[in-house]
Length: 306
Ligand code: GUN
Image 1: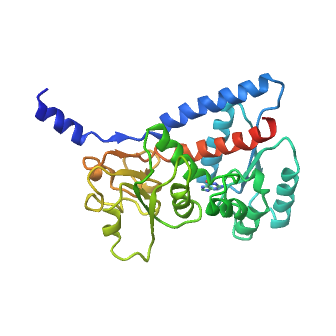
Image 2: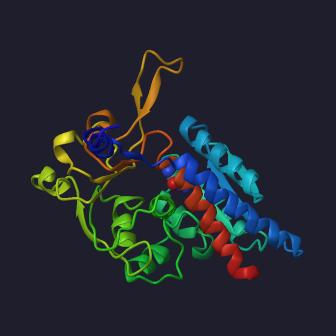
Image 3: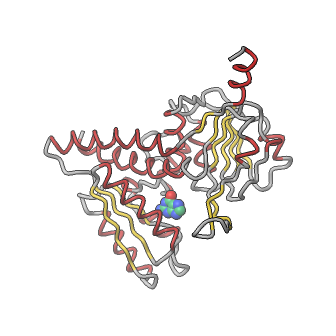
């Protein structure tokens, strides 16, 4: 290979930030931690997922969470309820789990049927068991940079993915697109925190941002969580940027048996030659949400069995 060839090679080879590889590696570490705790006579970590109704995507997500529990040696339990469960009945189930000392983590899969308040349910989970990191106490601690809270699972998973691939946010300009309470806003707080995964200068963009592309083009690290497939085009990214694509939207695909495929918020094929690293969709951020959840559960458990 000539020098020109190798320069060309280096310039065009983006690193694919493969969430399934990072997740497998981190889950092996979690499994080892569980094994050594259980060998000392402790019970395994317990994680309960509540699933209400028959939503297809929710069933898939909860199934993947249960499989991850089995892989790492957690006692994973899916509690299923019919879509017509009352809010009071669901709150009573949460209360039972809140006081069960064998259960470290509880998640209620969203969305919930319309007659149940997601806000009320989310806030009913004991903050110490809220391994999704959705509770106001955990969000408040995150906003204050208080490390004793439970971190939001998806943004935490993204920091774990970055760590796995040696991407350091410190001193970089991170642009986050999307201000949801589940991803965009907590992501901006985590990456700007005075913490090993943080110390970035963060700009949070949203639907009212004027001239969005002028911001995304400034990003050393661009995190996109919009739910608009293919929204970020090549002209919107800086040469050599790191792209984290949180979007996972089902789009029609007649070539698939299912009739659909998942597509991210970034036009992957168009930006691939321009960026230094990028998450694919699927198998990018997706597996890291579950890994964040598993890490949160392990951390809650470890605090009791240290
Ligand atoms: N629905 C879609 N994503 C999530 C998630 O991360 N946690 C919960 N509880 N529900 C979801």
